[in-house]
Length: 545
Image 1 (tube, one colour):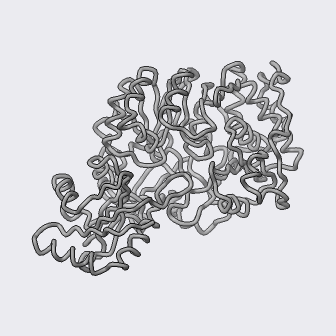
Image 2 (cartoon, rainbow, N blue to C red):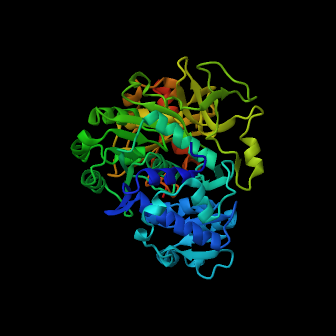
Image 3 (cartoon, helix red, strand yellow):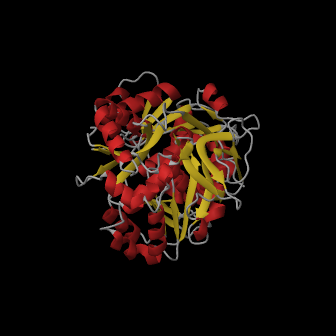
């Protein structure tokens, strides 16, 4: 059994050297070629002084070289620090200052976008295009290297499974970005957990429609490469038609995307899903919650596929898994603990609660990170005295062991003592109004009675306005009265992270600013509606840019 991340690739290369490993925009790299590139880059990194524990920041948009550079860093004993695609200069500066890399692997096109890299003295700049690449020079000898031979050639004989392999930065939706230090054991175990559940094999040809710089995308790459399958990716921006062309042209039988990626298809592009449906056998969805009506649509379009969705964090990847067809009666949950993973729900004193009791979700397993990079305080605050990693998410386990996710601990809305899940409200509202983007947050009760009330914030691309009366009529049979949104606010756009996640805290802050600017209007509407006996939904009509 492999102990190190790059050993998974090496084993597949030895078994299937001529098999396509990575296809990017039509350019094919076999396993022998990918291993060749990894070995060459690893040797150059060792010559540059990269050894056990040294960080290498990888800032590359070209996905084949990106993967080779990540694996090469690990093979050299270093810790890979992927720079997320489309990072703004301030973000790159943060990654540089926090991770203090010895080497930055990049390309000249990247330095044009990030002038700060020119003349940088803190780290050595290495351009991948300057490292010769002749895949045919590898020959049969390299494709059949044993693990021991590989280590000797690279010089990384001292690498152990508990050594750091990668630092992934959190998206920052809940505050400052944190560097998550993942060991070889963490990454290998997560890969094995996912593959044990999904059952993919060497026949897998998967279109990965998410950035490889993120936990989900790199995770899918590891899973497919570990079994000797083929991944299909693109360096460009994708739209539904382009994605379907890649899937069709390369005869992909597997597909991985985030919920927002699938949402692009629903509506005017649904016919495209029908075109690829017969060839798809595996699907994985992750990174954010998916609305129930979208799950049901996937079941309709892919009746023969194994549709899997996970819940996890950068710190604890794929902690639960669910397969939609086989677990249809539990499709409104995030599944049960993945193989080799334990999950409990804790009260504020870190004591386990009973089934169906709400508390903080905690995870334990070899896939869970051991520490945050340079942040001992955060590491300690997220650990219970029994070694559980406290996720900061609230939810409950039902009697059958399925996990129900309610939202982030700080996002749960306490309205008159009733705990309201923003995710539950968002899912229900999105199923009724699929053409809008929604975000539910807690806001001060204009009537100063309930403390907090749910506030519906939404973005409508076509300028459509949602009124309190319309919302009440749509939700009255679906949501309990004490959970009904009391405030509606239309945004021009939501504040988001670089990878497209809504920053809920910023939405809440902007909403409160808008309410302060016009307090009498929202309070008056609240009182008038309350006097007529209707749920007092206040409409705040101002826009936040």
